[in-house]
Image (tube, rainbow, N blue to C red; front, side, top):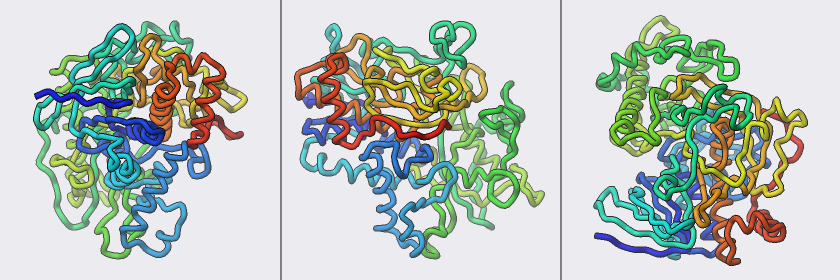
Length: 524
């Protein structure tokens, strides 16, 4: 059975960028269809189970207004519906999990609730239709335009043909791009091509991509035994050690990303080592009335469960499935190691009281619905952001390249995790940067825009453009651009290349709460 639905804007992928794009386009009066492969919208905030990675100024500036509304919505969700202590409830900077990675560590389900609330007016009015559990199947094009995208229901196998004047690729891996014949790149570029100091010294390697991670949630009930069945690949992962890693992957030894010096971790706070449980802790039970939560809860996205043995982009279905299953086995093996063999400060081994929290991530196996994807296919764009534009070492004035076509801002270190090419961390200083409109415009296609990590960046600059508030800004700019182009009968390229239209579009973004430039701040 094949249905056909028409809209003004079709967004393939309901992740962080996709939700921001849908929200912005719907706010501007456009009829929107958004598809999502999993059962949860929100991407890295929800189905990938990654608490927000943000810059140090996020509470005051450095994000779009709607992203700040999302953040405050999360705080309100806990204040309104949970029995909190008076101190926590009155804290304007409430961090529900008190985790160290972010000023706002929260459960994926809280993010999902808030996103649904933000989109509710447009869903209820019929302006926004969300097709959950739908995966892209094919794309029909004519020359430089996308005519339709066909998606397949993962429940019924029925296909739906989606037509619209504008299409946005907000998939986690840039899945629309190859099906639409869009020019794109993957993996690591060479210094010869980009001039970037941290690019490959030799030839480019399209298969050299950042590792991905199957995150999971766990709590700890002292004196209880919640040990899972031994994973099928446990023997392999217990003994595995990469050539570039200072110890076995399942150990308390990691590296400092910016120096690659070995560092020792611990599970819980209390020693002089950094606590990995605290790192991405999403529930701090002391923020809630006694008895609300039996334990703190943490999301496990550590170096120990980063998977780098092979890419899942532009490989065969068999190879992709093999790597996805191995990554799941790695995460489950990490949990089993923690429960049974991990050295403890008291001289014992293992923490059997660690409990896999399937409910927190909404799955039967306890692993996130979708792997945390750090690196996507990336469009060949009218303008590509290079390391030279954002590197702290190359921007001594402390600010990123000034782009006349800025459509937003972001800030994060250039942070690349170990890669499928067998390379260790690349973690270097960056300066607060802008998002140029040119990086959202493909070199050829006229009505397809990136709305996720698939914009015009490189393997290196993806490392600082991939985080939650930046992806949100990318999606919001893309959704607004599609709406603006429809309203004025223009192409995205025409908006960028006409100074008057560019100024008007930037004014629209400013009215909608998108920040275009940074005040004077420092490099990270």
